[in-house]
Length: 219
Image (cartoon, rainbow, N blue to C red; front, top):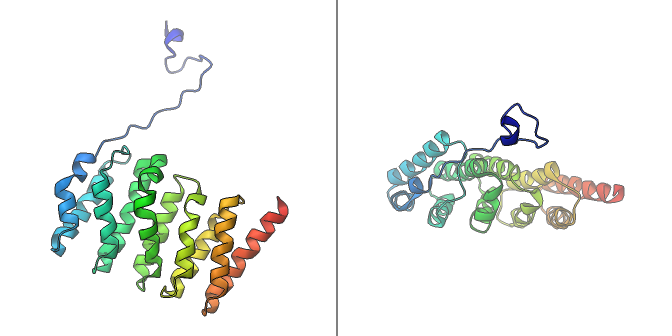
């Protein structure tokens, strides 16, 4: 009977892959939290961010049932006048990506990716580092070529901090994969970086272009 039911320890010719138990936290990310996230009161916004940090800290794996209103409210915090709070909000995106897993890009790409990556232009190092950490976490849940197109604007932004452009280009170097979408985005970003007035940006742009060319030759 054990063999018929495929109990643990019995070889029935099928690989048993343990399922990850995911928690539905949608109620914790509901209307009240959204209202606090968009509040004009800094203490309420800060408390809302802390609440999400606590939710994701206790629920390691969550379902993809995340209210779109919450995602929109979280996006608004990327531009918060308190840049420490902005950095924490961007970091929350990486935590969400890790917690949701492969479904995260499907639900968040159009809402969060571009606005978050825009913050590589920020003058505050903490904010830029939060974006890179977010990209690392997001990239572990989906093919990196899903993220590459967003990096082009980060490099070509005339008002962007040169340090942020270097970080964007380096991220592309570190995560480059020889496929058409990555190649196209990488070449466009490298071309934009090659025209930058800052030497470090031009240098890493040349490195990215060389990487693309070398992998194209090998394929």
